[in-house]
Length: 477
Image (cartoon, rainbow, N blue to C red; front, top):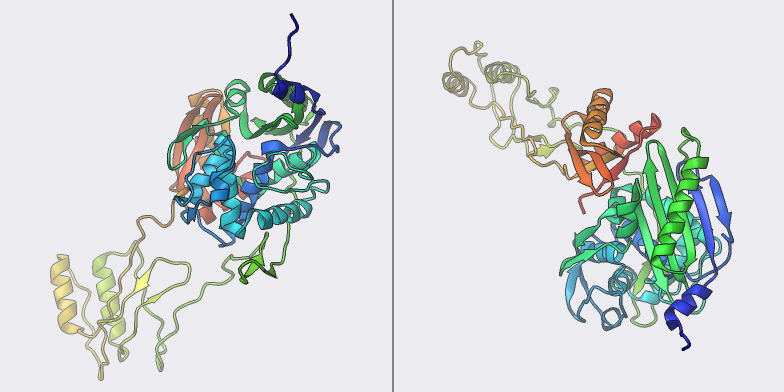
């Protein structure tokens, strides 16, 4: 009896092998084998699809909550797929989750069409982005990675892309470690869950398989201050591929210095070019990474009223109500009061409401500092100074505090708690008020600070990383 191998397995076994190991902190190559051979990347392609989705959200081309209409082209993609129906709508955030976790082909195509209008235009943008990232031997033809003529990459280029995902969009990196997530219409499981559950410190990134490519994987793992990225093309099975990646990660941790410098890769710069879409006659921006400096360089004070020489009165949060009433009344006695519209100080939640102020002529008699209960003091102030501007201080209850930071994964709950406490004491400027939370994962305990604004989380991470402390942002997605 002659055994005939499954055709898919026969082609997978024939796929060329390539590998690379890199120290993610410095970009130093620790091992390579056939790393520059142009091979089929399979679903590793979705790493670039997701990279562009992240940049499109950051630059305002689209939002995570934008409803995306599913085209017939996207719905017809072969498995692996989420099962989206043509004509249906689904938020971009769920398409991102399905692409990152389940490696859904229909979701990846829908992302490309939503951002660029067609998968072909999106593929050209993917190739432009690859060149800007230093992926010199990569060409993309689609958003999902199914085998197509000319759709090729290398182990080196995919390792570079994995490192850019870590550095350029750390707020989304947690997607790749989710063993399971909800993708809008159903829960999906991670195609990389076996490695995530078996290799200590593993937290991503992306698997890929086609008959032409074999079993591919870009994986990243962190232990202490060290982070390694390992890439394999052409594995013979998912089990043997995972074993090889674990071996390469071990090699990386063995060779990597314990305190390598953290050198971020250069962020790509791209000037959007207007292009004419001859199919519908619309002009679209051939968008790619546009880095905008949105940091506030100076704080603008509200302009004084015409003819006024006195700055607006702001209520300090630590003042007592009695002292504030007295101070306002005293200042109002020295100047005429005119009506002024409400104003918001830039970068602040404080709203100054002077709508109750009307023109006043003459001098208001200063009132003595009120004593006793607040209602008596306030009544006296109103009686003696009816034209005093009202000052309202509004404190935001949310303030966009949907962000957080992760400072590592540890063997025990107590170890994670200890690191959180030590870090909070060292970095009080940025972490004051943040919630310390330990999250149990299959491979350890994540130490997180939650309930932060994005700017504060970014600042905290940069300050911690400057002290060689592991840190990446956790986004609201």
